Length: 269
Image (cartoon, rainbow, N blue to C red; front, side, top):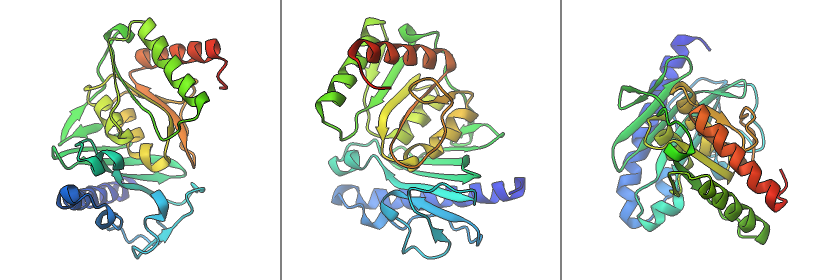
């Protein structure tokens, strides 16, 4: 794909995100998610594939739906038409539409739309990150003492996970993190990091690549870093995963705190 193809794909992703956002608004008080399930970019390129939560796109028509266990080399739309489903069902206003295009397994376009505020986050590899058309960058927080950190806790409730989660939070507090929040939307967390509303987001067990693919592009284009919880370069893979993102200094300190907590508690890496 060349630059002109990226431009066309970004326009398609924006249009699809806005359309899905209209569905979000119309469904909010009815607590229904089904009308969102067929929202997808209007891109008819025959070699483009589609990946989404729970085989979202199998019946949407056009293109090929791919197995959620495969991220191949073909251009692939990685889409979550409703990230933050639990928030949505409860009427809590932190949910969004997340659309990414991956080429050779690497996300190159990211679009996230928050229909409650009307905020549209966009990025194309090499072109920077934008909020409503205005360029954004991560905040230059100086370290944990200057950092607002957000963590999502997914559905896991086994004793080992609970102990690990609490141990990590305790270690961040011991290291004088300025504040910790929990929000429930991976994609929005990453966008809020990209525009400086948050300084770091981490999660152990996000639901699938559709949760983070768009945010990955947006954070990187906002001059942030995206890593795994052991501070290695993040690679988008099938299935649940671990991610941390923010400015490099804060990410380094968060990863060091998490590792120290895990070593203290005997948590597996």
